[in-house]
Image 1: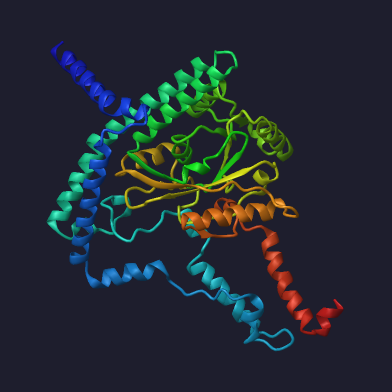
Image 2 (image 1 turned 30 degrees about the vertical axis):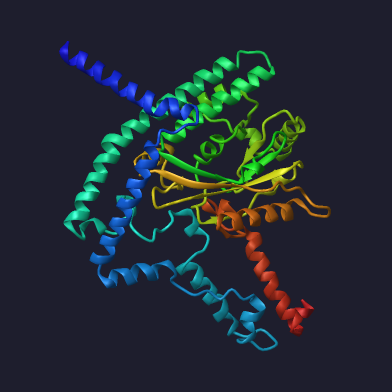
Length: 438
């Protein structure tokens, strides 16, 4: 009995501290300064570790690491210019060298598939998932690394799991209760309050430090918020500063329970697996949502998959065919404190959340941007590219024309055929009689 009493006292003390020092302040959007002190200590520790690495790492290793960032120097000139020095007026066998060179460049340093793996760090952040055996440079660095492991797994992980459990439980209970109320302004207010409160608690469970910029451009009701996509927690990052109507596929398990509870209190747009493939049905439901200016703005990630926080890939045009006002948002994470990117081909959701909760912290910047509308004579693809370019520039991200679907699928035949057509046009344009007659 004494052991049971002691366990109950420890648990009650733990919950009291968590509730008083973290839960209540985060629910009201306040801070007692604990996270700020933690971040200052963390920054100083990582700066010290970087200096130790620079002193202890051999020069050969440093050169190797710096060289690995850019293996080759690419020639970005168009095909016509690239072949001009190798060929005459008609087809020549030397043309093969140009295509072989481009193929080797893609194999050695593919600019697409490397966006689906974690971003490389300039210096080690004392996490074994990003190390190059730096912890063995000196006894001091090894001791700090071991101490960091103990802090992250023995203190931060239990604390974060407790907060996440409380946040998710309150979200399910709160939205279920609010969903029983009749439609009214009070129900909408309570729904937004529950969503904001629970999302703030969940972000605090990740030791999240978020810097919001240009808040005057926050998405308004009846609009569409589009953002670059790095992680499932992108939703939490944005929902901490405002409420959104989510769009997505119906899931099972815990995710399904959360979805069914949330949709009772707020008009989220969930689709069955069979419906998500029907573009016309999806477009119709989204148009009906934005037609009601009292409903929350829709949150959409047009890339359709997670990219590793260095780039913005092709935006699907469907989100830009709906009409209405687009509110672009750029999200940029600081990888020094923790890698927010979800490599879904390598880690399932549980493994990913474990990695996130055993990181130092999640630090990111969010830029709200001026609303954008489709211009006269502009089609959906051009509009999507214009919005994507604006987000890339604001977030300091590389803009790529490739489809994020290449993460799991092969290159479409249309891309290959386009290059073949361009080459054929060059030959025909240069007066090759044989090809011209064909």
